[in-house]
Length: 420
Image 1 (cartoon, rainbow, N blue to C red):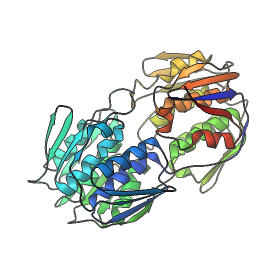
Image 2 (cartoon, rainbow, N blue to C red):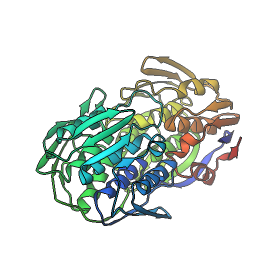
Image 3 (cartoon, rainbow, N blue to C red):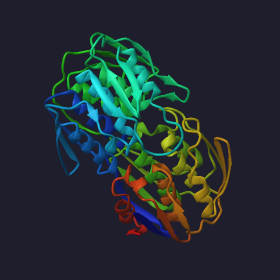
Image 4 (cartoon, one colour):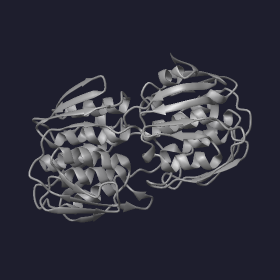
């Protein structure tokens, strides 16, 4: 098992190029199952999650080639059963359920694994497919879908108790493109990654309106064809590097990003007093020793993203002020707090709200990554901490950050990946 050794504090300076979005790549790769023809997906990040997805596609019968960020998929003949051994490794593997249902009108997919950050039910996915006429049974940890009869469009509401479901919206949209008639998804997720998937499906011949809003209309078509697509930049990776630069930077430019997808987090940085220069596809940030604390409540897009609350929590530890972060999407998503406190952070956790008294001197310590974004927060804190920090369970961070140690090294960080 690998670990990351970080020596700090180290000033960061220079440029970072942002990779393609993980959360776009996974459903877009799954969507290639909807056609027999060749699809070419560009700027797919080199991550363990995208590797698992290509393995799942190959196991389902697709021919998959991958080279230099380009994945080519030709799913001429596919199977309807996704194996447990692969699906268990990644929660997002559930997004093969929609395209298998749409194309084959049947699917068997194991209940997925992934980060342990609280309850992440697939109920809304199943509710959406049932709304299209599919019959669903869950037996022995497997989801079985039969849509051979009465598979047609309808009006479906996917709003859950914690907001819209991104992968649920993706799944229903991918199934509905090959259903008879018109489907209206109400309470749809409006994230840029959902819109990116819709744009790929439209290139394949789907008829979709309203992606990027909370109401998506899909007019079913008989079949889809092959297409080429370039994945949007990863807004969470970009936000992570912005937090790192705000904490320990001397002027860092984030290149090949999409600032229009990052308005909520950019506003927090601006309100706190961090100098920003925002271009069409770049952001430059500089530190501010007099930065003010912030109050964040996570919300579905376009609100502040839950996937950035841990990183902003790390940022708050070095601001000489009090900040609060309230998590409404996954209320249990604070497992990084105990590890930050081991490094000297002053954090009081009350229910789903963390109160952070910043300005304490962080010191290196052995810490344990508990999930993808928590591990990123520990790296950020380690860059600012005095001495050596050893971050264990590094496989979490490799799920969502492409070559993160190389990128940080290129802007001045002192870190090294080692095996136990």
